[in-house]
Length: 252
Image (cartoon, rainbow, N blue to C red; front, side, top):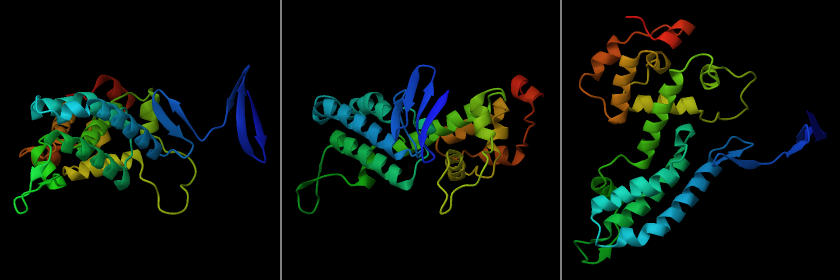
């Protein structure tokens, strides 16, 4: 293995007879990876793919033949999976959340159509609040949060030998750059748990107990705190995360 560099900057890496050039971004398994570890380009790529898929079915979404429920199923089974490919790994900012909601509202306006204004009598497009009332399913941001938390608990339940688990609990060396720190993936998990009243919980410890994990997953997936969740949150005790516990479960 050799490296070609100029003034301390690596331009390419050579392994055996193959040379890998240094690039700003590249595609790997359908995901856009950048040298700045930014998710913004991936969101743009997903929205472009979602727009292309939307334009293929927009005439069907505007037609009066299918019912509104059928149109929503088309959106959730054809368009949404294209946009949310590998969304479990996303660390979203407010700007990216806004872009995703704008895209979803565009599709929903096509599905529900315009509404006649009660004052002027003219047709107008639906407001965001009206779309929220008509669309009973969780919005696109909540879908991302639920999938991200489900993946987080799946990783937390893995053994210490798994590389994904070591990355989750590991502490990288060095210092973070100056300025306002960027939101990490695990920061988004903590913020999501705070929204359902579980922000102070050791969620990695909960993941080691399947019964406790199942209860917490139910809380998050239903996007609300059930009546008995308070008892669960107050009665939970962190469990041991030893190698034996990770492999064989929590002893009763």
